[in-house]
Image 1 (cartoon, rainbow over the protein chains, first blue to last red):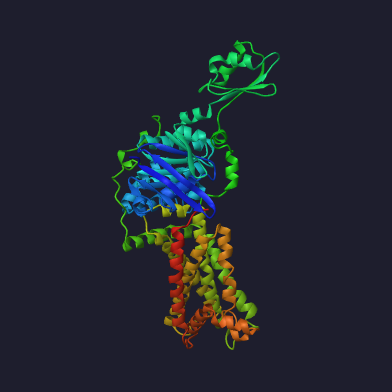
Image 2: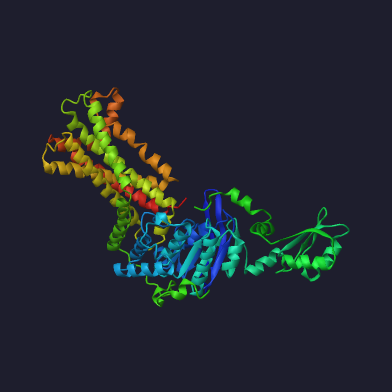
Length: 322
Length: 284
């Protein structure tokens, strides 16, 4: 049985339907990536699963416990890291951690020891006794996550954990999530970035307007999208037939090429690289002025799966989530 | 994972981060734990007080300014049929402690905006404890401000003319009234969408509340009949009168018990509303 299970969750805020029958399942020891634009209902789903919000309809359980009926028992088992680093800036990192320990009914000694362990684990031991207001974004994020881990949760919720982080901190966060997964953590991660879901999650659920519209592994989703495309600007005497013949085995036979004014767009097989495309065309002697290989983006996912762009949704229900 | 990950260098398995399904012990609840939760939450704020002395400084400067300005600017022109200092100071005290309650709403709005309320609500703690801890710690700050005000007031001639016991009772009455107001502010802090809004919404209504009262002038000297009526019926007038009578050693009439009833009623009603709001509070 999945450790997290949600069936037909619904939630409305006034006239806005944040969730319209969302189903989710997370197997023990895996990461589920919940992928969607702003306003898709990601945060609403996390808030319901972490007992912060009651669903209007549907049912969700964690470790067999109903989140709406026994919120207190759920809270003993979960860790939550939201979109903003929820740390008390006026306290030191150590004080923040000890506070959470005491809230989890640890003794003074236990919460001190646990705080030290986590400071060591998260490379905050040098900064442990400094007031958090002087911390960098990455350090705050690490403290934030370590605060979610004080009581050794069974399930971790990460709501857009890398939003607002610089690339270096983002990579560090990814490594950290990998480590947790290696230790057996069950994680539900929301993200706006296909790349992030791809990197971290075994299973990905794409949600839009409060519903799951696709799910599968990263590879399965990419196949759904048709993979990468090569846009070729034709040179003197070249045409569509020559380009396709030149690319040969690199062409994805399941998708249709498109012809523009002096350009040809050819769908490519999974894993095809730009140099491969250039070399193949060169070897075949096709006259080409320019080649651009583009990969599916979140916008492509949305365009393909829903027929509307991610941005439109974001503009529609800005600030849906709370 | 690589060999250089922090995990590989961790001292022991004791630092494991992950709980096993089915192993977790439910955190205990009950009144005793609710009190401990409240205390933990209060210490979160109290630790911060000495770290931002400028906050305390400015919170204290304002009442000192009020004491001095009202006393020396209006002192000569307002006729209260006696010593204006002795009349004014309890009013300034009352206004200051009630204004001090606004910090509660601002602090809560800040926690809400930063997602800290979400974190607290996701913990297996008593839900009321967060607000009790906050209001209690703000009370401590109010006491500190009060002590400074008392010191300055004594310097310019204010005295406990009714004796020490009544003076302390008056002080306790004002602090208790302020505590009840911190629950109104808690509700405001949980209801508004930003810290700025909490600031405005927290203060704006307290100006008419405290000025349309007996705090600075006698209501019977007010220019219009309806102003006099409002001032006479204002609970803030009753508390001010109670404190003034106790500090001055004059008859208190019904004002003391009425003030206590007001404070308790406001606390009961608004703590209920605030805790209910807290349970559904969402970060913005």
